[in-house]
Every structure is written in structure tokens, then in C-alpha cells.
Image 1 (cartoon, rainbow, N blue to C red):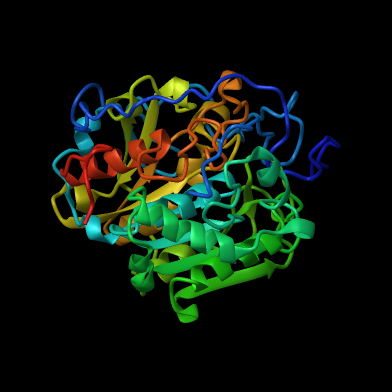
Image 2: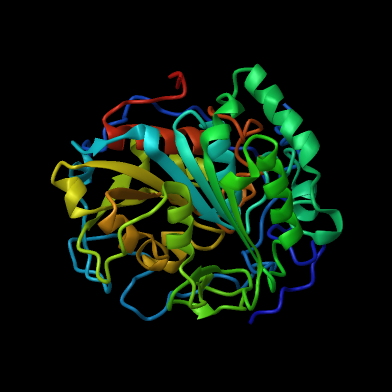
Length: 411
């Protein structure tokens, strides 16, 4: 495995490097049709700096090539057949006209995406049925500070205290910035930490469990704590690097179905996963949902896996998956959205899987393509109106045919 490089931030998800401005901007609510075009305590944010790769390295040589499975690191789906048998299209209209039950939306993610999944699931709890976090910390963990993100949100010696974060969550709701956290009482949560994870300590995920216990019954939380032989990876059945590694593509060949276990915890008993998904990977321009995506460290396109059953008009639900740092399509190509293990379950269970995409942006304090859970893009990073959060919510609304922008109120 790659040994984390010594730096001012030991064994961190983030590394302190001087950076420029905040890159804040308004969400563009005018383009919310996926069929258009081609295809609080938390919140200070004033010391946001820049992250390293998910292996804790300083990042000067951290850009990694994808495995040689035919996924190109810079190309987008073009109508070809992928290695897993699914097809691609650049026509976002393929995601229009779906019958989506938005009340059954769920979300999960790995590393910075795990933090983002928790953040999104809490902020939009009125529509989120379940949350999965692999190596993800509690809501508001960073409190808007990269220094806190570099310590409490990663290191066992200063793991976060859930109590003030629970109080801060209630304050954000009182201000109207997020949905009522009382909604979480009926949600279900899946958490996983690796015993060999030297980037996000299992103690941080322990705090995530304690945080959710402040809002829901313990029985609603499944926590795979300190899984043996597992490093800083999202575990898969048979794809990726060594399970105990912390290296690209940050999918681990663990003999363990992380995606399927998370989805089963969220949705209950599922039909068996298909061995070869036959749905379609749809390209969705993120610029339809936010003005100037690059200024918010967002890629040109997001991707969605649409099962044939959903494309044929059957009622489906949406599961959003946030990749980790250096795991976006701009770095490892289609590897994450083809091989993380979600599509096989989606195919058999009427689930559209949405994969938003972040990119590196040195000027925004995010040179490694992490999601904003400490305020590099917006001081209100953990609220419904934060650019990355609102863009994702608007994409869900578009898939469901229920337009949404930052001025729309969920019930």
C-alpha cells in the first residue's frame, strides 16, 4: 500500500496548502430538466484550505491512472458498451420521463463522499430514506474549519464529540437552513470503518454512529466497525486494489459487498444483484443545475445508471453515490461508477443510481477533487442552499420530474 507522505497534516484526508478565494456562487435554478441539452456552528469556512488525495499524500504525484479495463480517464460515455456489459449514451433525455418516487431517495459515499452523504442526508432528511457512509464522519464534523477537518475528522486522538454537532444540527434547522432532523427517526443508516484505515480513523466513524443515535433508534443503524483487513477503500466483492490498501482506485477487492450491504440496510430485503447489468449509463450535464460548475469544483457531467425497468416506465427510486477524493471521472475514468458495485443491485431493484462528479480546483482550495465538507466552496457548505448540495438536490428533482432549486421548500 502507499504510505502516507509526512506533512503538516499527518495521515489526513486533507493537507494544508495555501489557497485562493471561496468560489461561492448561486445555484442556477433555470435549467432543471435532465432532458435538456446533450444528454450554525458548522459554517465558519474562513480558513478553508486544500485537501490531499484520499491516501493522505501531499498530492504532487498523486494523480493516478485507472486500471486497464477500458475506462478512459478523460473521455465521457459515447454510446459504447462498457466492460460490465452496460451501455452508455450522451443523451440526457434518456433520464427524462422516469417514474421516480422521490420519498424513497437515499444516499451513500466513501471518504469525503461519506462525509458528503451524511451532510446531504441530514440536510434533506424530508426526502432521504437512508444514508450510507464508508469512512465518513458526522454532520458538521469540520465546523467550517480545515484545521478541524485535518484533526477531529480524521485522527483517533481527537475524534469529534457528537453532542455539540447534534445541537448545531438543531440550530441549523431552527434557522431554516436544513430540513427537520426529526425526520431521521424513520431513516436507516449504514456505516463502515476499516481496521487498517490510516486516513479516516474508525474513531471518527464511531462519532458518526453516536451522532445518528441522537436522532434515531440504535436499531436503525448498522455499523460494520473496524472491519478486519480493510484499509481506506470502499470494499467490493472482487474489484480493485488490495483490501488493506489506501491507493487508487480506492475500491478494495475485499470479498465483501459494501454497496449491496448498504442498500439492503437502507431499503430492506432486495432481489439478488444481477451479474451483468443491462441498463444504461446516462450523461447528465451538471451545468443544467448550477452556474459555472468548475468554479464550484464540479465536473462538466454527472452520470446516472438507469435500469431497463426504470427506462420502461416502472416506478423507481434514486440512490445518490458520492465518490471520494481523486475518484471522480476526471481522474480514474468510469471506474467508480462502473465498479463500485451499486449498478448490479440497482438493475434488479428498480433503483436509478446518480453519481455526481467533483473535480480538482486549486483556486478553490480543492486540488484533489474532494467534496465540500469543510467550507472551501461555501461558508454554508452543510446547508440546503450550498452550491454542491443544491445542485445534487436539483438533479434528483429533475430525474423525478419535480423541478427544484434553492428557493424550493421540501416538506
